[in-house]
Structure formats: C-alpha cells, structure tokens
Amino acid sequence: DTGEIIAQKDVEISETMNAGDLHDNLMHTGAKLIMQTVDSIINGSIKTMPQSTFFKSNEPLKHAPKIFKDDCLVNWNASGKSIYNLIRGLSPYPAAWSNLKTSEESNATTFKIYAASFESAINTIPGTILSDNKTYLKIACADGWISIDTIQIAGKKRMPIADLLRGFKIDESFSAQ
Image 1 (cartoon, one colour):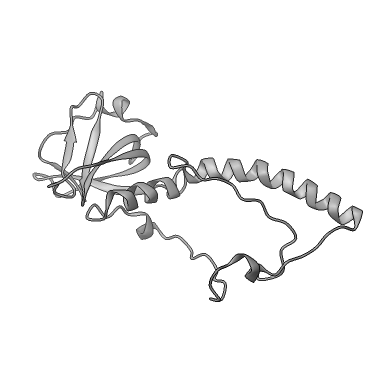
Image 2 (cartoon, rainbow, N blue to C red; image 1 turned 45 degrees about the horizontal axis):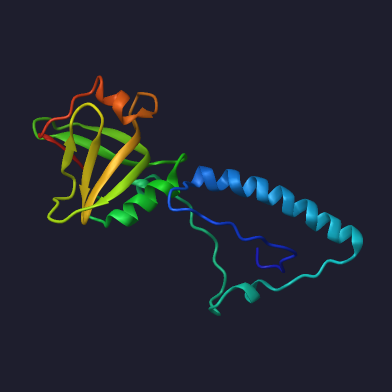
C-alpha cells in the first residue's frame, strides 16, 4: 500500500523483544490509534500525509518478501548479533532452526530456537557446541556464542534448555549445521 497516512505511532523495540512481543505491543497500540483516528474522522479534523514524508531516501516503497523455510536456517558463520536478531525476528513463528549432528551419525536432528542470548568471544569455531548437560547449551558463531534458552527438537514440544538437557545428552561429537 502506497497511499497516504492518516495517523501513525512510534513504538520502542527493546534489545530483548522478539516478533511475538512486538506483535502484542502493536496490537494494543494499534487499537488505541484506531480509536483516535475514528474520533478524528468523526470530528472532521483528519489530515492525511504522503508516506514519502516519513522516509529519508527517495527509494520507492517495497513489499516485504515472503519468508521461506531456508530463510529461517541459522548460518553459524554469521555474526552473533545477526543470528540473535534472526532468532528474535522469527520467534515464535516460524522460528529459526538448525541441525544437530554427531560425527558418528549421518542423520541430523532438526531443532528450532525460540529464545537465546549472545556472548561475545574470540577464537570460536562456528557450529561448535558447548554444554554442561544440565543448564546451558551454547553454539559458537563467528564472533562468540549463542546461548540457547528455549528450544524445540523435531517431534518434541518447545521447552527451556535445562528441561531438554535432562533427557538429551550432548557430547563433544555434536555440532550445529
């Protein structure tokens, strides 16, 4: 849609907010804005503005691209910030995903990541997995570690990482791909 704007409201996106949190925030903010806009229409005080007023560049407006499954695959060679933002941007749906593979097995186990954090570090080998098999699971990326907080292994329900580690043991033969 490239028509004129009747009203808009800025919302703050925090560093820990995911797409689901933003959706809920926009749902409440949007409902209030609709009520204010309807009141303005009824009062006859409505003024429209061209969308170009809100953009610094003169580039034409573009539609958001469709998200495919492969767009959600985590590239562990990427920077931690970009992986962290991918996870936040795709949570809770469709969710970022990766594969867990052992050196002995030819099959990989697919898992989705719903919540994580990033820890900066040097000399990491992307895809390397670090876990105490009790409370944490970290996967190395280009510039640090992505610490998985909430995960879903294929065929299982979504759960905190500590719950998964009670029944799923990780050893040094595992890697993320």
